[in-house]
Image 1 (cartoon, rainbow, N blue to C red):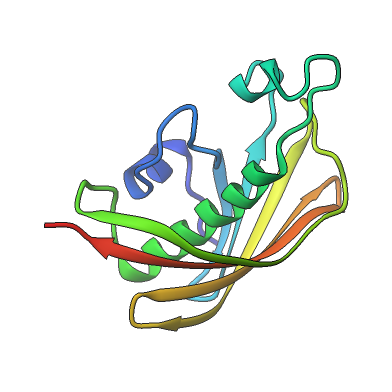
Image 2 (spheres, rainbow, N blue to C red):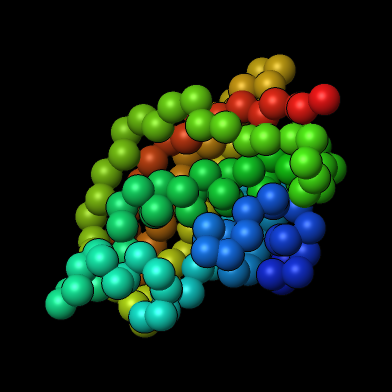
Length: 148
C-alpha cells in the first residue's frame, strides 16, 4: 500500500491552492487504481457563492477531483513530477452522475481505475463516496501535452 501526503502530491500535480483538491492518497495499486481523500471544509472559497445559505460542494469540482486523482495515477505510472513542461488536459467526461450532496464537514473518498491508455490518451473511471454512500461517478478521458 502506498500513501502520499500533501507534500508528495504537490511534487506530482502542478495544481495549487485553491485548485488542488486532493489532500491524501491512501492506496495505489501499481498501474491500476488509486484511492484519495478530500476533506471538505467550510472555509473553502467556493462556499461564499455556492450557496450562501446552504453550502454545497459543486458537481463540476467533484469531476475535477476525479480528474486530479486520475492525473496522479497517470503520473505515478509515468514516474512524472510537477513541472512547467507537462499539462494534463480534459478530453472528455462521460457517464457522469450525481447521487448525493457534498457539504462542509464531509470527507470525500475518491477512487479511480485506469481503463485504457493509448499513446497520450488516458481513460479512467472514478467514483466519490461520502461515508460509504455514492456521491458522484464519472468516466474521465484526458491527455497530457509536453511543452517546449
